[in-house]
Each structure stands twice: as C-alpha cells, then as structure tokens.
Amino acid sequence: MAILEKINRYKINKSFDITLFQTPDFGNTKGYKIVYRTSVLGKSHDDALYEVFRKFNVPDTMPSDYKGRFVTTGDIIFIDEGRRGHHYYRLEPDGWMEISRIHIMS
Image 1: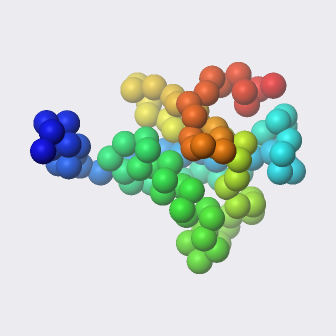
Image 2: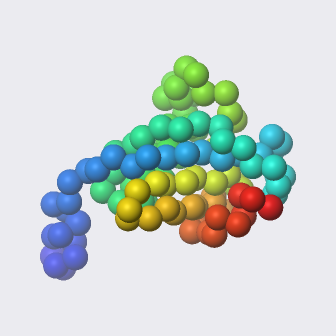
C-alpha cells in the first residue's frame, strides 16, 4: 500500500462549510444566487463535493427547507475553510473544477 493511501485512510472527517450557488434557470451563465448553506463531513474537498451532489440530487435526502433545483452542470459550490482559504468549484460535464470567484460576480 502506498504511503499516501495509508495517510488518507487514517484522516479524520472534518466539517466543511458549504454554500451552493445556482442561476434561476438551468444553463444560464450569469445571475448566480445563494440557494443553500450547510455543512458536510468529509476527508477532503472531493468528499465534500460528492456529499453535496448526493444530498441535493436524491429527493429523499434533500433538506425540507431547500428551494433550489437538482445540482447540475454549471452550479457552483463554495467551500469556506476560514484561514485555510476559500475555494470555488463549478460542476462541469467531466466533474468538479476549481474556479475563480470572478465567475460568480459576472
């Protein structure tokens, strides 16, 4: 087993503060609004992004106060780690891609 695999296997889940941004209509590239804020557990950003995708694409796991649509291509997730930084990810056809904050403002 590779050293990196051993290290990752023993990492402890931590809580990530997540904000989900969506446009009013699917396919728009401007007009992102905050749809939901929550926290999710994960070992990494990849784990957190997977959990958000799973939570907001299965009707039985969606929070009752969630008013957005299913998470689809073009939606943006903001992960706030405080002093460790702010990270923005947009869902692309081939997976989550880290982006600049400027995409939300335009």
